[in-house]
Length: 210
Image (cartoon, rainbow, N blue to C red; front, side, top):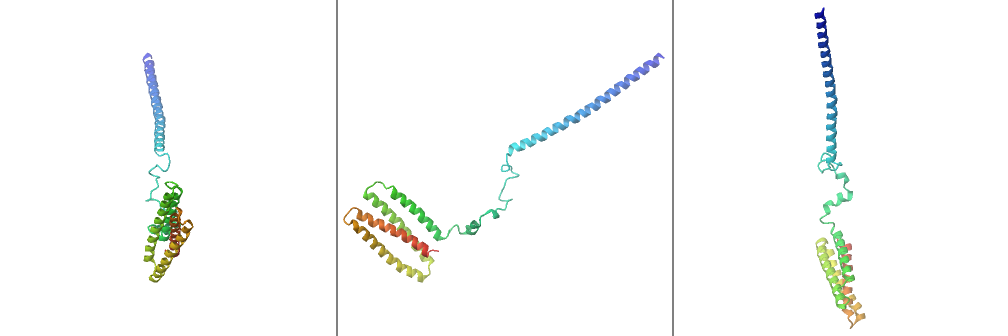
C-alpha cells in the first residue's frame, strides 16, 4: 500500500513537471512571436525614416527626378520659341540691328550725360564719338543691303544715299552757322551730323532690310 502511494506521488510529480514544462514552452513561443513582430515593424519604420531623410522631397529622389529622357517637354515650349528657334542665329537681321541701335543709343546717351568735363572740347569729343558709332553702323547696314536687295533697288538706293549725304552735310552746316565764329560752331556741326546719321540708320533698316 505504501509502495503504491509512493508510485502515485512520483507519477503525480512527473505529470506536474511535464505540464509545467509544456506551459513554459508554449509561453516562450508566444512571447517569441510577439517580440519578433515589433522588431520587424521597427526595422521597417527605420528604413522608411532613412529613405525620407535622404530624399526630403520628390526633386531629390533619383526615382522621382525629372530628366529629359522620361519627360516630353515639347508641349511645354511656347509656340513662339518653337517657331523661331531655328532663326536664333539670324534673329532676322532687321531685329538684330534694331536691338543693336537700342544698345548703341543707350551707350551714347550715357556718354552725353557724363562727359569727362563740362568743357566744349569734352562735349565735342562725345559728339564725335556718337557720329563715328552711327556712321560705322550706317556703312555696315549699307553693306548688308547690297546683299539683300535686287540690283535695281540697290541702284536706286545708291542714288538716294548720295543725295542724303549731301543734304545731311548741308543741314549740319546750316545749323552750325548760328554759332559762326564761336566755340560752339564745330560742336553743333558734329552733333547734327550724329543725329541725322542715327535717324538714317533706322530709316534704312525699317524700310529696306528683311
